Image 1 (cartoon, rainbow over the protein chains, first blue to last red):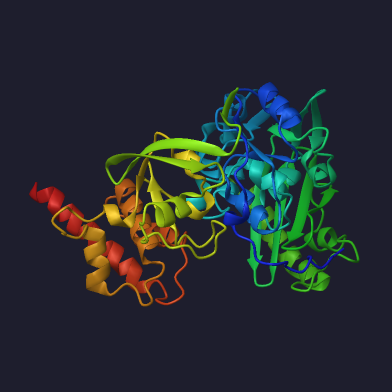
Image 2 (cartoon, rainbow over the protein chains, first blue to last red):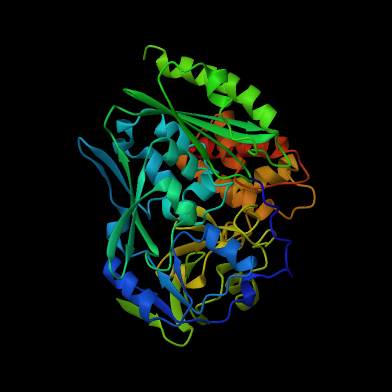
Length: 271
Length: 169
């Protein structure tokens, strides 16, 4: 359901942030310790692209925990079962990494996020943990059934990426990594409609497909379906209230079915 | 873990336009404020203040970064190039600057320093970029005046000039 964004408050700038204590941990455990012991509220800082937007929207951290030295957050790798992506990986590093070959279509979709300049600064963790509907990694990773490893003082928990929207970041504040399961040989295709804005990801695995639809203002909607489901039938399953002021449900059902037909054709075409 | 600052004050040292510099600053100082207000380098323009427009782009270790969305402490030990650092000591313009001037690839000029630095980084990675590559890179920054065409032509012109210089050397 669409909820109108809060009215913009008084304009703030970066200059409104007073000087605050600054910590630079070397490990996940040190980062959690810093968050627990620093003056509250302490903020995690990495790429900065979303952080500064939040400052302008009113966030006022009393301390900064700068993550750039936490090497565990930068690891990317895969085995037979999963692709693992560290939270500090930038978009630029991610889509160029050979491990992404494990999921055909993921690198191409990831490469379409943001711009050349921002892709080298913005991180996977920032994109997901900003929990903004206009950011796209949540859509791609929800389609792929990815899980998020969140660290807190009492250890690390696994959460489906689609549940990060309502995750309790007070107990487990630090995204360590995201894991994409490789069972069923997943592959991905991504479509965007810019006017009106909505996006659609389709993940195919042996035995099941997952469709995800999102708009600039709506959280991703995920729909699991059997292989071969007709496109119009799949998009007709959109919830009745899935619409925002920029795009109607009827448009997403109709245009989404056309997208889906193209996506299926692309993904089923011989390599 | 390193506590870089307990009271918000911090000393930083970095290379600015080829020269080593150090400053006492604060943990909340952005690179754009440091450059403009503390070092009087007004060529770095701030517009959106949230990474998006790229007007405040400077090169950090050779790649453009929004100075409005970078803390000053992040450039410790790194190399920063601003628009003031591009021209030669005798005042000769960098080939990208010269190409922008020749093509009049600006109108109000507010985005120009960021665009030129972005183009400089593009040409460092792609000596003879095709038009698609130029468009992809240039779309990182926003220009509300030119419609981008003259900027694209200026980048092509600069690429040709730089390739010619290299061949001559």
